[in-house]
Length: 87
Image (cartoon, rainbow, N blue to C red; front, side, top):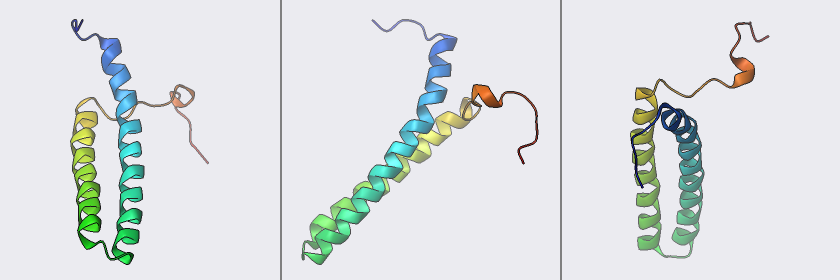
């Protein structure tokens, strides 16, 4: 089912990567909030695991950002593909 990667697949990946990065950042923030709640409830080990998961998402985002950088960065929105100053 996996055929050769087309240029369209790479364009799609270039658009997906920023979304995945943002999504991971949202999850990491939620993990940190719940870690604080767990710590306040006396569940130090639970909090530590949640914070570890948040750190891992940060590492995943570094890898995803590296992939995005190799693809040339996030694509420019179609409405901004023309040169003009944004005031």
